[in-house]
Image (cartoon, rainbow, N blue to C red; front, side, top):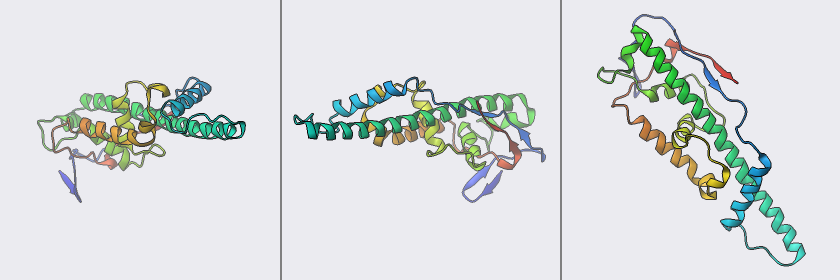
Length: 204
């Protein structure tokens, strides 16, 4: 076992670089109708009383509609980011599954994921490997992206979320989900040495 700072790394015999399956990232956001999404955001703004009740005079009514639209657009932006991050998490979990299959078929890698062997790696080790390779979704930590996918099997429509979740809570929920998932592997979990692995990142 190699130790660098406060991190331990599994030992892999030889000096061969192991090729892992490509990480396939969906480039297009899976939101069916932007107009419908904006309409749902407007409903959230009103139902959760994010602005005062509809005024009666015409001048303030125009200002009300403008502020309502601004808030709705903000919610849509938060939701679109959430969907994008969920897609990253979905791709990462599928990639981890493929990597586990790859490890299982190679005698020199198979033992690295066995929990009865020390040191051993875990599923979270693959997320750490992505970070060590400087692979990062824009605007969100890898753990949060994976945590969102762990929380939602499919991204729910915007109408299912509260404004509090979109604006304040989704990050905490995602991190909690990731930490719980990562802790399922018996500690201590070691890292995979990044210089010993290579893979491609592709959009589709």
